[in-house]
Image 1 (cartoon, rainbow, N blue to C red):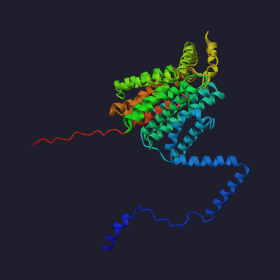
Image 2: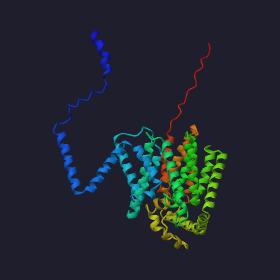
Image 3: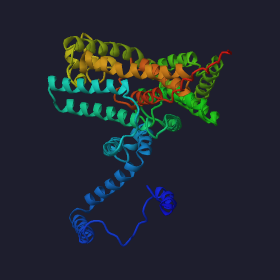
Image 4: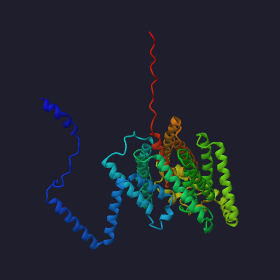
Length: 462
């Protein structure tokens, strides 16, 4: 008995202890360890001999996928950073950004099938996104699926998949603040590149740069400004983020995008309400931006004058064109109010609903209004589903801000309002900022809740 009691502690301590690996021990049949490598070598040799280029691409894809399976969070950051340089990456490959996003989504799906990223509750944002997927499929089935519909459906699927992947990663090991920092830094670098090449730009005298269309580029920068204010509030180097925010704001002003500028002004007002930006800082930011613009105008006076004159010359025409496009989108919605005319239908069918000024917008393929274009293509059900994604995202971030005054939650709320206003003048459902902000809202809304502490009991004296 005494001997058993002495040996019991050591036996208990050995439970769960990993056994030492014996290299002489093999698992499985002995022939398997010889046949499998020989078959792989034979298959690889034949493949290299028949199609060396294709074999190299397959091997590279397998290596990249293997790396992404282990570091899916870093891959998600790469996708976010690369989206701001989409038109620069075209010189590397026409589908570089899309290919990278597809690889990340596939890697996420494989890893998600193996184990969950988190155990957080289901998000209303993702539920709304699921409803949007159902509406997209129903609209495609009801209206018919031609080539344009399938292509547009694929674009929707890509951004909805990116939303799910980012939301999963952000509720897992990827910190929301890190994603916001990467996005702001990428936008600041892209804005700096655009400002540097602006004096030598030909054709459209507006700041475009890594995203060729100035209006779309302004939409990226608009989301970056409030997020820059948020990350500087939690950073040990706020000056660097101040500089990044100012660069983004100056480049945004150089795009001459009226919708984005209006969205920025509304966002600054919201930033003051959520105490992300004091009034003095608003004045300082405006002074810095105006000074930078004035300095640029003085250094490149002729270039700025030509840019402004070109913008003024087409301003009135743009207003009339957008009004006509909005009317056409409204007529399309009234014609098919439930499920719309199908994904991608606005570009092909809006001219059929033209009025007297329809000839001036015959070659335009967007409604310059996210909500009206979605309503025309997916009906009121699709519009309500998209609005549900944005509204639930704002509500979740707003609840987090009211709970603990999180600067990042304040920045997400501010950016959602600013981009929501700008989306009334731009068609931006196929660009990253809206979906990135929705994913960040999912993450901040399930942030650490402060546990409610019960007040200590006071014992009454007897």
